[in-house]
Image (tube, rainbow, N blue to C red; front, side, top):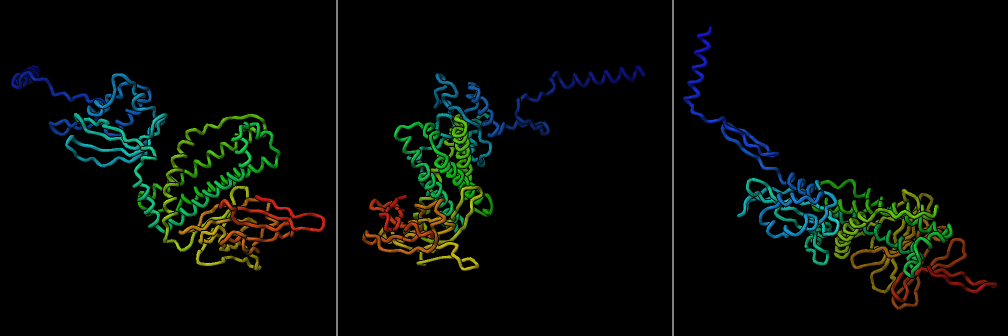
Length: 462
């Protein structure tokens, strides 16, 4: 037994001497880099571009100069790395956008390249919308950032192409008309309801003092306007959430932007409303924290309006114009959708007992040869200004006139050449109403109390 063990030890020693004195091969330590061992070869996989971007964002958040190690040599040569901190150079990021799109890897004279399309907001600098990467020394390095250009120098080609895509899709085209009409409805509601408050603030009155001095009826005008507008933003959000499959990627993105615009609009409005309620009921003002939301909303709103303006001006394909009418001051708002037909002088719908539910009358009110549409529904009037390609909501009523408004209105000459006005008598017979345009070209709604033996004629403008 001892002889056998001795022979084994001698054989092992002989083999070691025969193979020389070389140490066993070592696998290199590459940190977090994945290592693949294939036979006698060691393949080191570089950290991916997304991991590099996340690492850079983390280091930048701590203002760590180590983030400079993650940028390419060429990019580093273009930056003042010696004198400024990382956040002074790259800005303070609000958050990293991990929901962007990484492009496929391409080859260039410098090596492998790829890009990450995203939206990264920064505190005091334009947002980043693309990160470029270069494979340098077997590692991905950030090779530059693309930032959003100011709108005055932004490439208008994207807006043009997106508007054309909307025009080519009948359903999206109709839906964007409806969304724009609801957006204009909110704007009209805000202007009319907040006219006194805005005028007082513009004249130097403190907003909080003005609000606290309001009588309950006057305050209700503001509060109910907030609720109505929130309800319309909710309608936009719900209409853009479903039923949009098989669309081109750019249109899907645009619909998402419209939905996000509506969501943030309602969120900002709700926070302002809650702060206003607290001030009016308890005399305590809590400034809502909405600065970031307002910044995002401004971008979404401007983008939507840029596309919408082109669609509204260029839509020569739609034979009818879809509008969505709302009423009430409680969510959800009552609503009805109708298609205004410019080829018909009058449209209406009756209920089962023959009463008019809604009525739309074509009348040339402003003399531009594109007849307006005056629409009655649910005790309210809607004025759609005629355009060469459709209609634009420019005025409407909201409440407190249900007892007077009814669908029995007619048109008559207004005294302005080429212009008419709509007139009707309230159901109670107390007033005669007139809807037309002023000499300045603005919608003008007025009522006159008929003359009696013991009173003179009185005219009021709204």
